[in-house]
Length: 202
Image (cartoon, rainbow, N blue to C red):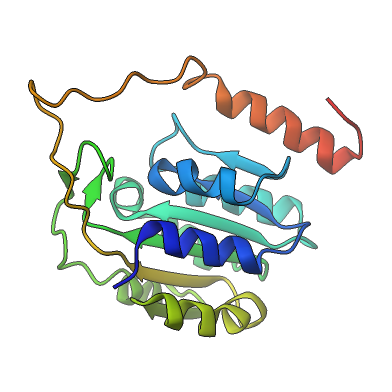
């Protein structure tokens, strides 16, 4: 099967240097080190809003590809965004959903509703996305990436991620402390993004 780290590394490998990324939760922690750029924005603490934030950026920057690295639990919190994206129909919008069945992969591992039962690709088709893909291996993702990035859009990519086997958080397995900038990071990243798009430095 496909791991989150494998998926992130392949997406980073195929990313154009001028593409904007919006990521959340597990993908955010992995993608930013794998593909550092002032065009990276995380959607924490706006959990559930990655697709909406990405849509706004795609509409505002129509000549740049916008990559949204979403989670299954995050998308379920704002499922109506699928219809909003499909209605706006941005042709530069690629929506990856990491379907690992949990919130806080690698730590909390809190099971999301209907984990393993929800067909996110079918939901995207029903909403009206121009193209959908379902991938469950690193070989499959690498083979599909050229079509994903150059084919019809908005595109939806359902990534079936291998379940994490880490013990969930408990009294005996406490979560790690949040970084000091956990709730200010997004603002800092948005200011860097604004400066990069304006051709200035911060």
